[in-house]
Image 1: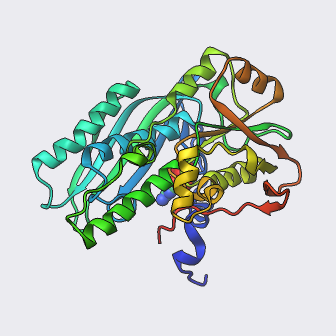
Image 2: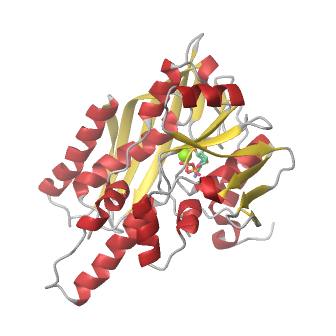
Image 3: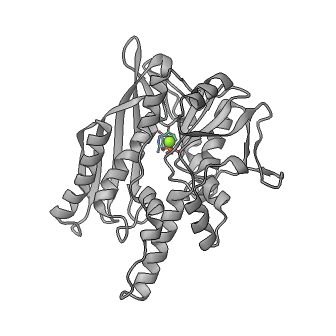
Length: 341
Ligand code: ADP
Ligand code: MG
């Protein structure tokens, strides 16, 4: 077969190739590659959930402005987000670290302070991992183990036609937080005497440095007996993650620009940086909010219970992913994903 560059295949293309090359064979492997977590048999009523994520210095974080303590917290919460997006709960994590001599014991302990805060907040245990040397900077790989009641398992591929598409929280904040930190870094390096003026952007920077996984929403779903028809967490950006739901559910989506939940501070900062707030919300990524679909009755229950989610559109039968702009133009959504290669 003719060889191809990874750049031409892209992250999602490569994952598809791996998936097609490895059919699951064991009866206990319920869901393999392709959702936020793998699903494994556990007991009569429950499944195990397993998710895995890697963070690499220079690609996913910059130690000039990502403090190690926050990085420890972020590495855990972003991984747990993939367990919650299956409508389950996490119990344990393992962490693999690739370290160089550049780090002291204190630095690693700072990292683990953040891990500990996350363990306490999400009620999970760190139960193992691996430690190795690295010549390419800090490497952090986290795996999480959770469980879900069989009847509550929520996949990417099970959205239904006419389902209402909902998103928790707000979008675009983390990406703009990153842009502000990048700007401060370049200002600081060109003029180290300058005091950073970051207090105006606290909301944005906090979301970038210390994103929370939406365990609270999964708890709410359980309280009010809602099981979404489909769900994914937003890591690559609303557009990409919506396209995952659409392709896997073999349905189209229609969302409305005017309905996207974007905070005023996000809009103001986007304008200041000459960025389009809608583009930041669609393609920024690292929101770690939950994107899910429910039928109209369940949507009304969510609304009646005052749950903090926004309906942004609905699933259609035509397999097209479109955004209706504020000017009523129909715009085709494009997958972004991270450019890893
Ligand atoms: P997420 O953004 O939710 O973490 P990813 O896009 O990273 O999801 O992964 C999508 C799916 O592909 C998941 O099921 C994940 O386990 C799987 N996957 C990603 N990379 C690999 C790999 N190198 N080998 C096997 N499975 C992979
Ligand atoms: Mg995910």
